[in-house]
Length: 255
Image 1 (cartoon, one colour):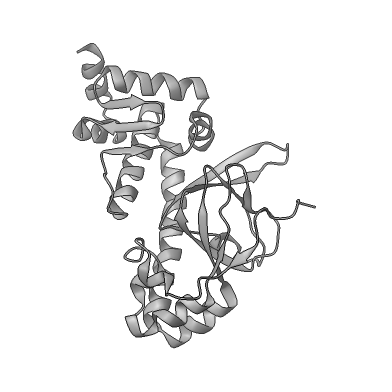
Image 2 (cartoon, rainbow, N blue to C red):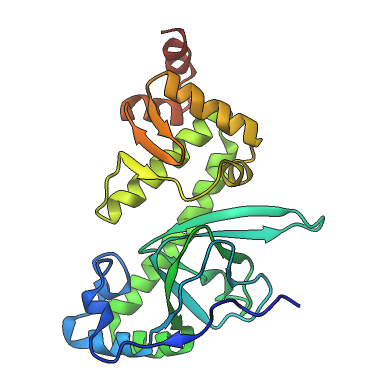
């Protein structure tokens, strides 16, 4: 049996509507709720103490009871293969919702672990369903979140079908860039919360290959890289690499 969830003590802020005050309000669930109904959404949300790096939010094959909106930090989702190896299936950033993998089967199909200190808002799914019936905008927004989850799965399959390692990594960086932009943060300078090893696992690449390509992109002045900090210097070229334009990659390498 998996160990007990870490840091699962619930606490509430008694004096204010935290959804209304949250900086992620424009991209999280409250975006679909009228101000008059925001207290009703806030009332069902449980806020857990922060997870530390390596703490699990939930485990694969445990009962599905809630979805989680990430307030700060980042999470990695992964499954365990029959041979006991970890397979990364996704990364989740602040403002995004994780845990929807269990809706169909009532058990989580993956585990979610904190990549850094992470705060989440826990939303009991049965109470969310009841509220969604009363607030049509919330139901529509939730359907959009589910659609986005399906799209993410399709994008992963597309990533893994790309012929070159360069194209896979370029596509991941562009995807992260768009997600940071959605949070109203810089889309050209951002921090990668995941390790090179996690990136390699997610994209089906050796960690040495990931490190080599980051160095190559830096030498080509496509990226500026300092540790986990990334700056996109040439977005147009990164898009060409993502599209699999081998000629442009080769020309840049020779230059």
